[in-house]
Image (cartoon, rainbow, N blue to C red; front, side):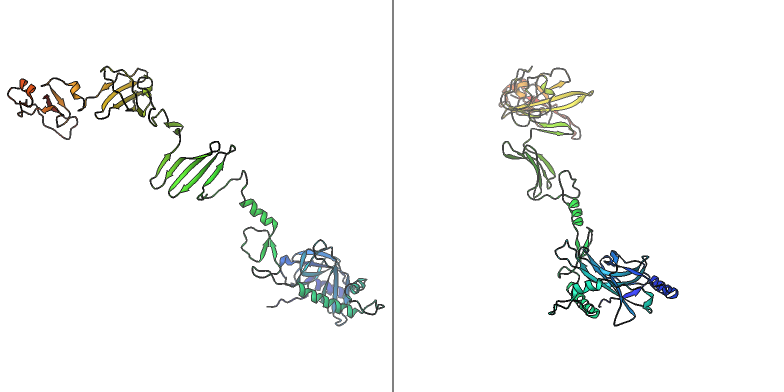
Length: 468
């Protein structure tokens, strides 16, 4: 649908014209204003008292009757090249008391100023129709000469210095029409060139307006992070991880690989990178790597030397204070005194457990030494007292050293006698195979000292006899 352009008298203007007719005092129309309509072509309304968005108001340069139509009054205003930088979408006529007499819309025309690459002087013409033109005071000054100087084309006769009013009007009309055609471009789109309106909003979804530098700055301030800014939201790590640099050129990198998440430390002095902490999501385990000490809740839980990380670390067994340390230790050359006068040698393993006795430290130590027939020793330490002597635990491997006489009867915690012993169940034994035992039991019959077992009860035993 084509846009209609027209001019209407306002309600205030009609009332003032009627008043001028009744009083016989002409109405003085003295000013013309132009506006940009807030970026839109306006629709003139008789109830208006002002323009939608006025950008310039100045005195009328000429106000005269149309030679072709005696009921038409034409108002003209020259906008110099120094004024501009806005669109003209609406026009209005005001009297000497700033009353809006007539208002009209205008083909969208951009008026540049002299500071831009393209500048021009522009004339605005407005036509109103009245029943009695005598009620309006007309104005005729040097504008006609100015208009002729601006718009009359050069002629061959150099003596021609004046022009008729009709020629000036026709020339001006032709020039304005040609100018409007050259500037009446369509609105710009994402695919076509044209006029475009500026917008400072940063949340707009419009595709027919352009962002201002203010909008660009708002976006920059919201999205571009600088030193000291706080980041919010979800952080996604790339395959190369997130690197945090220190002032001494060391760095810590947070890396992800498959189902593993790692902290990798880079030492600038040695130019080496080492993983310090790994998390495996599939196994749901944390793994410390290449660290000497690990603390949880400010308490050391894994420290080289204190908690037996590796061989040849831990408490010397001869130091009476070291038994207070707990953990698992590899000990190669044990050194201690024992009341049993047994001195195991060679590599061994020390396990130290801590408990409490009336809220005081109490440590139990178990020491295993030997290759083929390991020996088990134990001792304890209570608070500030020195540790006890080492005591060897009786096992199947060392029982011969503790019970030596043949025929000796003892309790055995189990249901099967160890090697060299027979069950005291009243059975007959081979006197030739056990000659020393036959001297004690000449009949070849073992004593019957068995008991009934209740497997639901702990610490049950059998009676056994030393056979050889």
